[in-house]
Amino acid sequence: MQTVQSESTVDARSGTPLVAQIVWVVLVSVYGLVFLAALPHLARAMRQACSAAPCSVFALRVEDLPELAAAGLTVAQYAAFQVMVEAMLGIVCAAMALVVFWRARHEWIGLLTSFTLVAFWLSYMSNGAPLLAQSSLVAARLVTLLGTIGALSFAALLLVFPNGRFVPRWTRYLLLLLVVLAAIEQVIVAAGFGLEMGTYSGAFLVILLVVYFVAIGAQVYRYRRVSDPLQRQQTKWVVLGMAGTVLAMLAYFVLFEPVALALQPGWLKFRIVATVVMLAMILLVPLTLAFAILRYRLWDIDVIVRRTLVYAALTVLLALVYFGSVTLLTALFSSITGQQSALAIVVSTLLIAALFSPLRRRVQNWIDRRFFRKKYDAQQVLAQFAVAARDETDLDALTAELAQVIQETLQPEHVSVWLRDHTPNEIVRNEV
Image 1 (cartoon, rainbow, N blue to C red):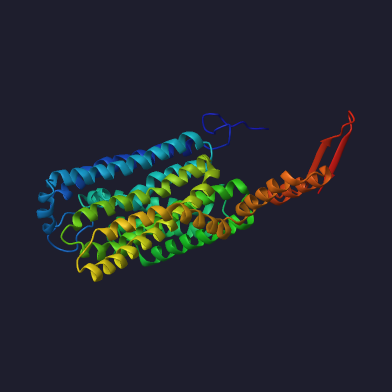
Image 2 (tube, rainbow, N blue to C red):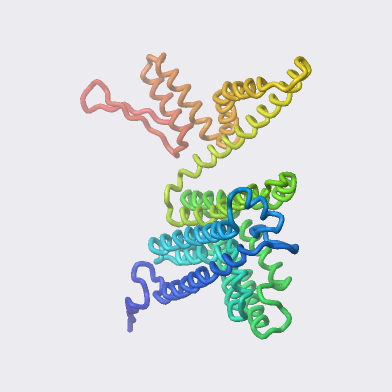
């Protein structure tokens, strides 16, 4: 006898259980409550100047207080700024999660992605959640549990993105091992056997790192062997977001400390700006994940990557030219006149203005040849055809050339050019 599942328990369009959507709502609500509960603890911590190392990178130090007062700001205003940044980051992640949930809640990958967007905030971005965990034992256990769930969901998403399937299939067992270890650790933490709240064992961290590296390798394999063109565009978006985040974090933690120390006094302003920029770059991960799952303007990624490469390289070159010319001209004018001259800066600025357009064209052409060869070749072929079409008088030769241009630029499996002859109802056909 055939059984029919109730519409109240299973979504008819895709078979996604309604219970999964209910679980999503419950878990996200818990994350939202933790988010709201953590803000007062963050505000309280930011109002207190840190006097003993180690201090949080976001906390005021005692030596920062004179600089803060000189800028006309109070400790309360600094705390309000940090709370505002925390709130904005959480709101952006939550907004992206709600949009993805509403648009893709009928797909498992949509549910997982939208949940990960929320969990990502607490696991990797929140400054208030660790402070909330210090307030009570219950809060500590809850924050630890939610952080673990967030790490697991992010690992799972990396393994099944973008179509919700494990590729290769054996990667599911690696994720299962990670889940089992996480469950055991939660039991150990709850029972008070050895592990401190908010910490992970070495075995769990090793397996977590292995899963992340395997997931990256699996994405490369999926991109080259399995994914269709649409899925490849989705992968490009996520790779862009993760690359931007990794570069931002490396720049922050590797370059921040020496530069900040070199700028003393005055490093508080730099620290605030650098922190905001780093956190904004981390938002690239949830933003690009949302774009990829919603399939919104997927094909713009090539344009974004191309322009990013062009203007990043152009900025570096112009900066080198500017500082080099200022240094050389200043030394030259000093040797001639015996004193500093503002003329070196003026000449260097004019030099940069003159170099901008030709240098941008050369950088763009080099990047097109190096990274976007097909696009560059297509542009060259079309330009050559335009020149040939002006001078060609033989129709057969012109149609053959047109078919060849289409073959080289679009690379279809077959090309035919159909032309109507002077005689009615007769057609001339050229093929490549």
